[in-house]
Image (cartoon, rainbow, N blue to C red; front, top):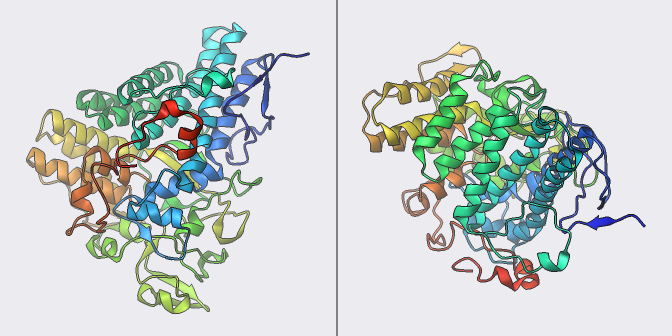
Length: 507
């Protein structure tokens, strides 16, 4: 009988329906010891991790939607939507919240795939120059996934090799947040060393991807010197890595154009096909206007909607506002303003809606834009520029270099579909350290609006009491700084493994 390893976190989802530029090679839930016979077998397993990212329980909906709802930019439109979503918006989440209990095992399946690829590569005895650039993708995937987990949960179970003993795995303990970050950095350093300068698609990480994520990890942990160094490495090698700012901001969110752009350092790719929950991109539906006929996708669901104060406080001269927000819809063939959206469906609210995902979905495999062609940029070059600016301000305030990084981002925003405007203006020279810090966080808020970044900024800068208070865009009286910067560990995991107790404070 063949020796078969039963994985604790099953490598289901090795079909790559969610990744348009990756090979499709479905595998089952049992992993034979002898599966890894070639470098291509390692790549196939890594491709499976990308496929799991494009599944409904990760970027399709369960993981991505709460990130958006917990920001101060987005709230619930249709109050009849599932309570588990409303709880994230209201900061009334419990340990049995269905969004968390669904995505937790999927995240560890992604990690399990990365660990299998790393262990399988070690069995091959291949030349370093042949195998390391491939397996470096697995190191990046593992770092990327744990980076999300540690920001959301703090101390977590950390697994860095395949699990072959389920009973032993049931008793694993949590690893401290500091140690998890150290392991993430080590994985990204390996990836930076061995990944190629460029890849055929941004669905695969490159050397710049690893360095960009190192910069973001260091920024998150307030290691501003290293954050600046890593961001500067990417910026100084912009041409070598084939990176740049896309001329027209709108193109970044047009699914039919994203594949040919050079701004994203890493993307989760959808391609308009799906198999069950693989390739099911729900964001166009979740953010779309109910009954809206634009795009002929059947309208949206009015779930994740910006508060009208987002529209009111966003300067109307900013081209990014018109790209990011839909202020009109098409109803019975007539264009109408957002103040009348509820007239066409009572579940709509009187507010501008998110346009980045529902406006240009490309090919879709299901109604309401589900199964779109969108490529979701996990890190854009514009963000690398803003990381460098923010970090440099913390090291050496008042530099024209830091001003210049922000000015590049603002300069692109002044290009309104080929017409150059004078807004937003360049940074006022000589800002104090505090004023620059406030300015660059505001710049991130508008540049990266609705791109699942704002909650992480609120957390790392501890802005919750400010942004959810009386003067914030979105008042959330339930928010508690002593509890809500972390998710609760899933209750079902705690029941299976008491070693993960206690839960995070307040849960």
